[in-house]
Amino acid sequence: MQKIRLGRSDLHVTPICLGTMTFGEQVDEPTAHAILARSLERGVDFIDTAEMYSVPTRQETYGATETIIGNWFAANPGARRKLTLASKVAGPLRNTPWVREGVGMTGADIVASCDASLKRLQTDVIDLYQIHWPERHVPAFGNIYYDPAKEVSQTPIREQLEALAGLVKAGKIRAIGLSNETPYGVHEFVRLAEEHGLPRVATVQNVYNLASRGAENGLDETMHRLGVSLLAYSPLAYGLLTGKYDQSGITGPDAPQEARITRYESVRKLRWGRPDALKAARRYNQLARDNGLTPVKLALAFCYTKWQVASTIIGVRTVEQLDEDIDAWGTTLSPELLAQIDAIRWEIRDPAA
Image 1 (cartoon, rainbow, N blue to C red):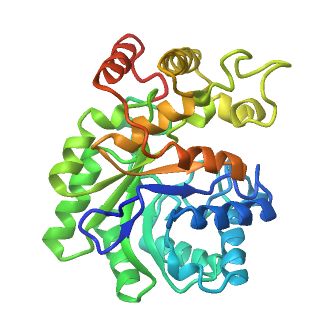
Image 2 (cartoon, rainbow, N blue to C red; image 1 turned 180 degrees about the vertical axis):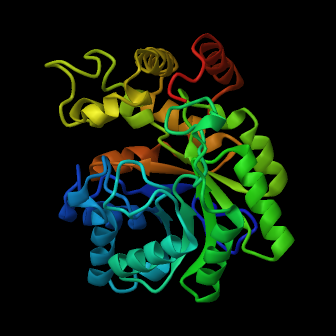
């Protein structure tokens, strides 16, 4: 895999990134360490985590993922310098008072969260530090409408950038990114950075998969013109695009009990549990089979080959799943197959947006 540059930063990474939000919840520490080792062995040099992981987030597991990664770094001297490490500061309160008190996300909150992440990760620097979701009210995590009546923002974007600039100056982070962001947010972060000489956003980490292509509705142009890279998360739509739910559905005795949507009621209440999301996934999965591909290969090849995507974040529970996801690299989709994909999207438009 040829490395790609993240935005206009000095970071160059593989086009596949290992996501880690299952570590500490569905994945125990020994298995997580085996996945980290295998990922590096397979040439993936980019890993992503967050202070609020594992997910579904609980007070008992807050910070567990970063701790597991930090323990792996400590047990494997030299591994850290081979990797580009990304983490995230949680946005304002989302029924998670154990993350921080208050409803906003001040500059002091950003600094405190970064310091705590560095300690858990047992490292001196985080290469890419991202704001997990905007401090502003925005439609995200399955919401599609902006409602100005819900705006409760307390921290200006410039204050957030100044806090991040302080962390860059202190050598604690190298580059900054956003997540679950909108075109307006990307424009404003870049505008203020250029106007005031503050760090420029390198990346945006947003959902992107066959059942959720909202990034193509304007965000892609914004990022292209401003030189900001897309990190695509949930390329398999929480497992919907693997085919594992095609016969059983997401609940019931025949559903895969270890799988994410079946296991967690909180996940089923989100976009991944929508009937239309499963309906669309079944269509895409059958399209894959009709064209001699596995559903996983179709879904990942779609992300791996789209011009909008810089790096695709894969999340796994086992080493075998990791190998399957990496093995999908190099799969190409014909123009005819891409046209069939677009035809399904026209019928069932982004049900997991």
